[in-house]
Image (cartoon, rainbow over all chains, first blue to last red):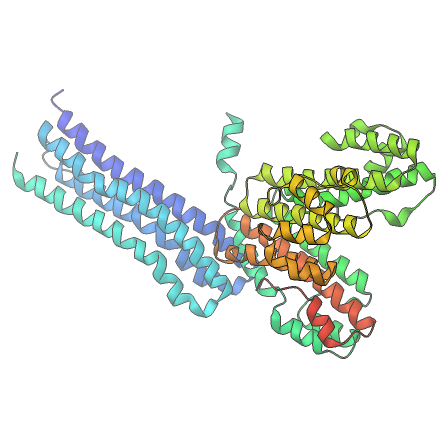
Length: 160
Length: 329
């Protein structure tokens, strides 16, 4: 019972890494199917569609980053791991923007990448423009990342 | 558990297939190619232009060339979609045409090998065997019952036309059912327009040949785009009655074409379908873009067939242009 704070904080880190990772896996997966279709017909488009396929992969990295920061703050990676229940709950809540923002934005970005890959299949010369559309979705993953980072550091600064 | 897993791993959005279709759309013949084909001096020049575009595999004979293209289309679809039965809507009419052929062949007790079409979802020889052996159970669903009924009617009455209209009506119903089963809007819209167009053509021909309401009641299929009962009543007052009825339907724009000729009306219907499917060029998910590609290719093949036949018969360029269908790209 005395380690409940640590448990909640760990749950936050796990959710952040797992949900954002699941979102990226789904996003990269569907974009990969579309990319395979284009490369089957025109192998010269490989490098272009690969970039578009990888775009939804960043949310997984952001989720991992948040998980790392949280683990460091709560002392799991070394140091003092004395986390109160209040602190633990606050860490959990801090991780949620990245967990859910990462999950849904990665899936949306994957779908957008599929359409962009279709654009490249038809007009390879428009690759630059095609990349902008899924990249716009990234904004919301970055906003989630920012809020999670600020919250985690804010919680540790509270000194509860 | 196994079933749940297989569902989870099935690509319901056809993402791989649609992106391959996006690349394949680049090879469709566009307006400029059809312009060049119309301006070509003879069929040899047409074949050269088509070969440049990778159409026809360099084959000389027009029928072989078109059959090659259709085979290529369905080979690609078989590669992309694990279960091609979702596209039965395009091939069911071939099954019902083969049923008509099998009944005629059986009743007349003659070998007519060339009358079967390969553009069907079922093996023509299966239908032939079912009718010959009167073993209709080997045919799927409603076709089994229909085959037995039509075979008996033909044997009793020798009325080939009655059998034909019963089978044609069943084919239209089956096509709409197959489209509804897929739940895809493109396929449903395609089946609905095709069925409505067939009903309008049957009603027009019935008026021109002086057929009565009983005939129309047997021949016309139910369809979403038209009210069957109203069309039958309208046809009783002649062609003007049909035009007056169509005025309040989605087919009002087709009235001038119908007044001109059946061929002009058929072209209008093909163009309407092409216009309906064009938004699929920007859709990245689902059956719609694949269905639209099949329709586009079938329409393209039909246009090339018309063009080659017209060139062979020395039709003037203007007349050929009037018959060429709108292109998807």
